[in-house]
Image 1 (cartoon, rainbow, N blue to C red):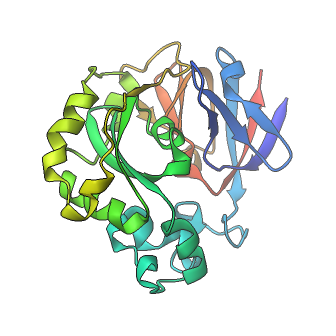
Image 2: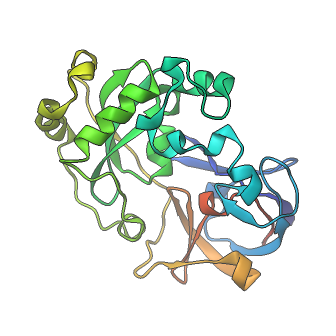
Length: 264
């Protein structure tokens, strides 16, 4: 059976273990059901997530011209502290920016390769943690807009990492941490504007991923260069497919690529 479509990040369902779905326009695949199966991934063409043209993908699933035009790729997406919708100030599209920025946001701690601080919309909990391959996470503050979440992250990353080591995450080279203790320790470094939004008395969320075998030395698959790859799927973690030969394929990093997936 062969399925073809443009890659977008896998959808997920919070269960033990997490359920993953690769969604195409006319089909979807439950990746958990494909563990142990022989899978071929073949590059077909590009399809920008905005203009849909067959143009090389630049970043985040967009061709170069769209990347510098669409609001979904503006600087405030990656750097929430640059948000300006709360000031009624437009960056690229004020209607879109108000819709995204002026809603409850969570600043959290997640442990995927190490403890890191991050920001996400409240509606994206726990999806954001799943996408990062975190096996445990906890909310620190809940604020009413993205800007306040951004300045909180900037303050806290002086005292805790804001990066994930993807190789350690995939190798499952992790240690359990007391995230409640971390949260209490970091409370002293919160900006004055958000101290009233500190979340008391919550507990950490634990996640389990559908992985039969972790790679000892993860090798990232460049499907544009290789054109085709065949391997046995042994796990899914974060937004990565993990294969028996230590090859890993980052679905999120390959958004905008049209692929054909054959299953044996």
